[in-house]
Image: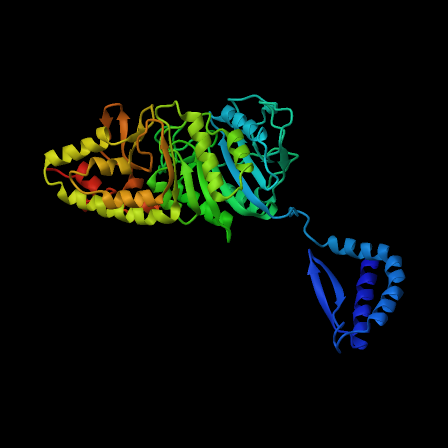
Length: 490
């Protein structure tokens, strides 16, 4: 403390002496370190070079003698700087993987993590994984069952079971690399804290978020334990709704924004989710259908992306390509990417389209025919276990309904929003929209969940349910398309 005060006094005395001699100076700051730089060289025209050389020769011995003192000055100043911030150069990408595996996908999470460690990652790309494990499905890696944060590093031994990446501490989530903690991944504050940590410790030009685990699209309530919104927590019996997901992303990213939000889940690509997240990222990627528990091939994805020019388009292509190569022999497989800035226009057109179609339904025969198009003719997505949510592909639906109402403008808007789409059967694979709940293979629920009814008193209504009034059922049966198909007598 005495040495520090002496050095501060010495610096003030030096500045005072320079001012007394009429020397102009500028304070230059770099990384919390300040020094005084002479800026009076040309105050009265060109300085005499000989005099400058002599002055320089006179100053050099003094500089050499003071090397140790200079270093001690900076050491003292460094002690006042925060040491928790990662001082690496700004990287091109930080990819966040929110791996909610406190459920029956625990073993698949370990496999996918090992795939990441097998990738040839570019130094310009950092992958962070927040992994939450379960207690009963996988006993590898010491069988820990809490929540850990990792920075993915290459596993030169190519071990397909053990995690070898660097474990991190995180003040935002009160996680220590030396002790165990249990976080509820369904809590939106956990996701926002993860994002805030990434922005502070691993700042980048671009950020991508991967939501990993179970998923059921729009749903805020349970259909089955394995199919509830996102971030399913078996131990806590909880999940994160899409409205909570939007809030978490917004809070965690602050003034920064996501380049893309990706769903390594089932039913990630539904229009309800895209509309909810339209202001949270530039792009959204995933499957509108079921996905195998093994999920994405992260070795192919990260290696391919790292070996590219690493632009947004390169990451989109790497994600889409690995999915197609992995699931080309799965009949139900499909994948798409949308530009979220185009989704609001799609929803407005879909609402207007639905309202016009509803107005044309005036008989039971017409109602039944349109209902059959939804359930049997258009491309649809649902689970293999019941009860299950039932989604209909919007582009396919509009094509099947062309005899009732032209869907050209809606399909044009969808095509403009689509960045890529693929289906193993060659069918349309764009965005699904929720239609109903199948209780059994042939039995449809006669009502919709209250969280999918415009005007209900539920506080977690999604923005789609609030705004797409031409399609979603309404509490006052005001004549929307689903009002006509489910709640109108003829």
